[in-house]
Amino acid sequence: MKEESRKANYGLGEMVSNFFSLVYTKIFWKKARLIRLPVRIRGKKAIDFGKGFTTGYSCRIEINGNIDKKKLIIGYNCIIGDYAHIVANDSVTIGNNVLLASRVFITDSNHGMYKGLNPSRPEEEPNRRPICYAPVAIGDNVWIGENVSIMPGVKIGNGCIIGANSVVTKQIPDNCIAAGIPARIIKKYDYEKSAWIR
Image (cartoon, rainbow, N blue to C red; front, side, top):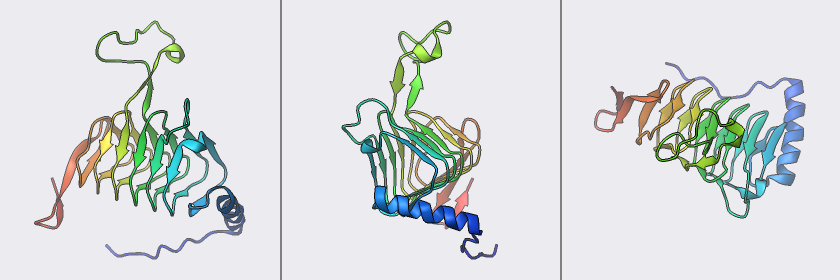
C-alpha cells in the first residue's frame, strides 16, 4: 500500500469558511487548532480540551445540568469529524491523539434504566423516564470510524480502532480492532510479531 500526501485541496468557498472558523477559534477557543463553523455547544464551561483540538463542520456537543465541574475532557491533538454528536451529562473522557470520523455519536446518558431493580417500564413516556448515567472513557491513539455509536459505560483502551457503523456497548481492551453491532474484537496487535492478528 502506498502512502499519499495529506495536503488538503480546499476550494475557494471552503478556504473562506475556514478563515472565519479560524478567527472564531482564536477568539473563543484559544488552545484549539480549528473549530469549524457551524458548531453547536451547550455547556462550554464544563469542557476541558488540550492543545490542537480540531472539529469538523456541524459538530454538536451537549452538556446539561450542573456545569461547575468538567464533564467532557478532551486530550491534546484530538480531531473530531463532521456532524459528530457528543453528550456528556456526567463524564466523557477522550484521550490524546484521538481521531473521530464523521457522524460519530458518544453518550454517557440514557433515558431510563433497563437492568437491575425497578427498570423503566414500556408504558412510560421515554422523555419522562429518569436520565441514567455511566462514564465513557476513550484511551490515547484511538481511531473511531464513520458513523460509530459509543454507548454509556463504555471504556475503549489505548491504540484501538473501531470499525465504521459499529455500536460499542462493552469495554474494548488496549490495542484491539473492534467492529459490528454490537462491536466485538476482530483483531489484536501482537508486539512480538509486529502484526494485527485474529
